[in-house]
Image (cartoon, rainbow, N blue to C red):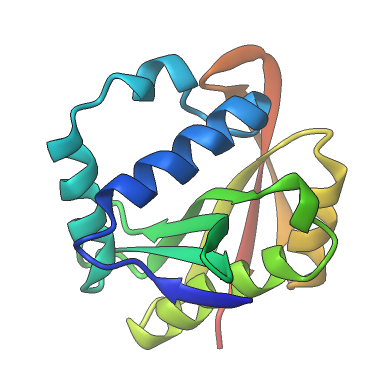
Length: 165
């Protein structure tokens, strides 16, 4: 299993794995399958290009042989921000519990360190115990902040942060 940063040519692959994630685990994301399924190919290509290089955003795939089995992203709200947001974390069900999620989180943390971030933050759906445990095992701590899940206000999200360095 490999974890790699996407390339500008990965637009179609990004679309496939992101839509699979939204369809399989809708309560884990702030967006919805319906909101993203109709995005044009050019937008997916732009997203791949944006996540492929630089210090403002990064997208990583977990890949087993030729199959994409996981996805995670990191981004800054502002180019000069020292805080990186970890987003879009997903591992395909057959690969859960096998260290894939840990390696994806490590990829975002390494990218954040390499771009001089001081903190990685995320929102996790309350009650998503496996995800909460994964983040805690990596050193993330709950901040006490809670907000409604943007895609489904019947669920809450909990803010977690990890201080670098």
